[in-house]
Each structure stands twice: as C-alpha cells, then as structure tokens.
Image 1 (cartoon, one colour):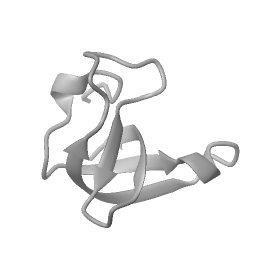
Image 2: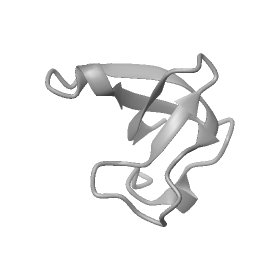
Image 3: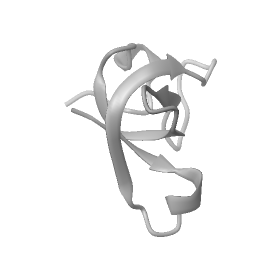
Image 4: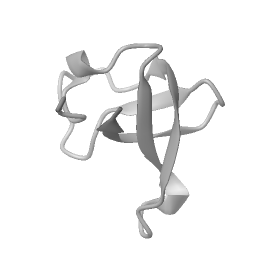
Length: 64
C-alpha cells in the first residue's frame, strides 16, 4: 500500500480518497481523481494536498 504522506506516490490521474478542510473533524472521505498536486514538499505529516477533477481540495488519506 502506498503512503499518502509521500508526494512521489501521488500522480495526476490517480484515484484517491481525500479529507476536505470542513470534514477534518469528522474525517469524512471524498473520493475522486487527482487533477493537481498542491503540496510542494516531498512529504507532509497530514497527507499531500491535492485538487480533484471535481475541483475539491483536500489532503490524501488513501491511494486507491
């Protein structure tokens, strides 16, 4: 299983599950396809921030 906290594991076009900013307290996952990777650092402790094809922005919790 690929670690969602490492940027190189996430590429545009991959199916992922993200948590949106407003869902962080409830940890509700949103599923979609990566459009853009917004985190510039190689790793992030809370997951890499991405924009989905649906334009939603959140941190990757699972790589599907």
